[in-house]
Length: 291
Image 1: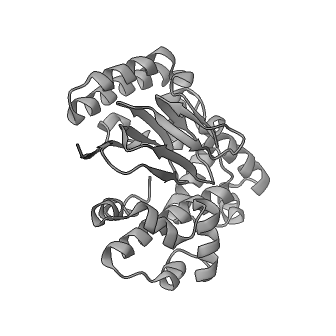
Image 2: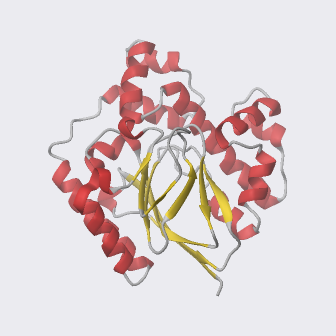
């Protein structure tokens, strides 16, 4: 039987500085496929509902393939490959890197480029959360479980979590608001730190250097606008390159291959084989520059 469900919700208000969104998905009876987990400005936290996640390749090529009942992944610059044999289900959370100390008890930098079971960080609470999500009767109840338990986790950690250096938080938000177009030297000058000191502190907290973060942010905007063009049936890569701050179309194509592992045309063919899938991403295109 063909099953194709999806659900989206913003987290409870008290979590929105730490979690951007919840996305639920359940598919069955579809063709086996591989999906590219692309670099983005969010950490990924997934709780499966039925079958485990099959990671065919991780951002770190040294990490072997494997199956995960839950998955926590940090920021990365190369794609992950997720395989399924015709069925997949779960809830994916997009975590804001500046909030991981209060939500996970550690800086996002400790999770850069790796995928681990969520219980490795969350312990027994993570296992309980996974169990309760799997036993919940529908998307609304599953999202409510996430709200309840994540608020509880944050309440226990917030008092002990050290503050993020204001300069790092400011630099991160400046990169987001600029869509990744600010130079590191300009960021450093505005913080009053040297470029070297900013890069070191930023990487420890976020998991990427400011330069790498700018690339990922710019790439994220590019692929979202590319999806919107595809939905409209009007691919204009040269115009997109200028809009997103690349030197030219060839520069955009090189960056896309570096961060997605394939050219834009192949990504569109693989990921958006129907208008509904493309529309879902296009609707989310760059609407929250503050992330």
